[in-house]
Length: 338
Image (cartoon, rainbow, N blue to C red; front, top):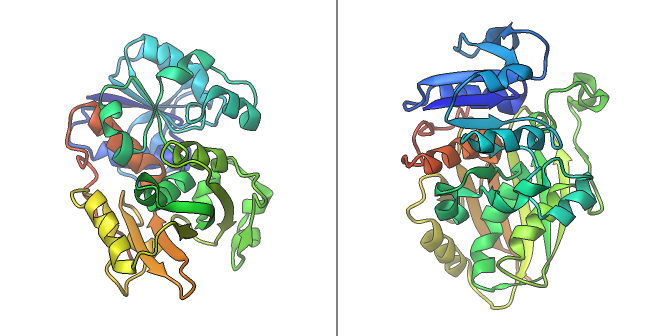
């Protein structure tokens, strides 16, 4: 397969290059960015063993490839998706452009760059929409926080066990904010610091969480508060929720084990174990633990790599499904840990 990465100089784009350059079924890898002129990929990422050139976006139409990953900011990916789809290229978009219904998108992000494509896009939460993904032409790769949240709560939503308000408290490493220069992301601002942001229901991942959750359960409300922590990669979420039935921790764990028993990436931890970010760093894996507090509230903890399962890893998993490959192809790696 010949594959393009559009937006190869960002953190997500570079993680895509890392994974795709080692993928056994990828025979050609084309890289593009918004910069002017052709540059050596290793000028941006010396540690990655890939000797390709990054070409400017105006050369995108000159190359032939089977799949394209769009790792551009929202509002920009949609401008390229239409032409690629018309060319017969299968597109996996890692921006927010196709994750939401049109009216919801425009409320949170503004005018849509390609409204005619919204209806054909398939939401790329691999574990829940794999059959649609297999035949899709355009995939909306989920956001990092929604991926962690949805995989943690949907097994209960599917069984109509949830009620009331779900509180989602999540922490992310700094690569989740992208690679562009921002004052608040300077070393002196981030190091030895820990802060919330997007407080009060204003984070743009909230409608994505609620939109998918409402496909499985109505009348639920999500309170989502993200935090920035001083590490490079990883998301750790703690989710508090109430059930309609009084189920034991073991009964809850059984629901998740039945749901994900044959899943190669999602690990339901045994009693006494809790997720941690270093265990999933550099992987497409998901760690989930289930606990209850004395008052009956369920506490779910979940860990993913925001660049892995939260972005590039899940995107490659979706490419594998679209190509008729084993979904683990090119993704069978263990955590970096140390």
